[in-house]
Image 1 (cartoon, one colour):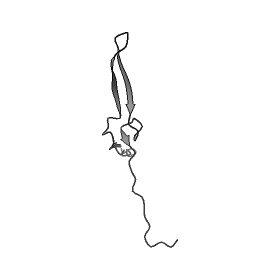
Image 2 (cartoon, one colour):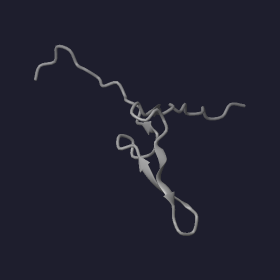
Image 3 (cartoon, one colour):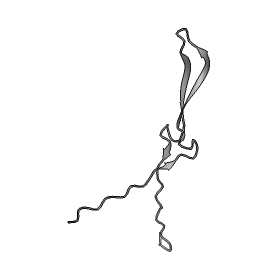
Image 4 (cartoon, one colour):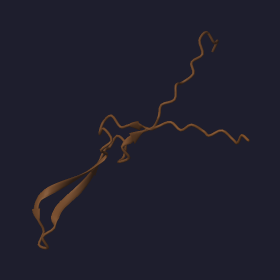
Length: 67
């Protein structure tokens, strides 16, 4: 018995700007009055913090077509 074929999924590409490490925690130095480290998070602006970029689809080109 055969069922429907599974759709193949393409893996998303790793962001070339951050190499997949999209969000980092940066310490500001020192601690607050409760003893906690003061940190901020920074996200990769190229991938918006996801670590991946969309898979590029090859575009179809038509050769010799009249415009």
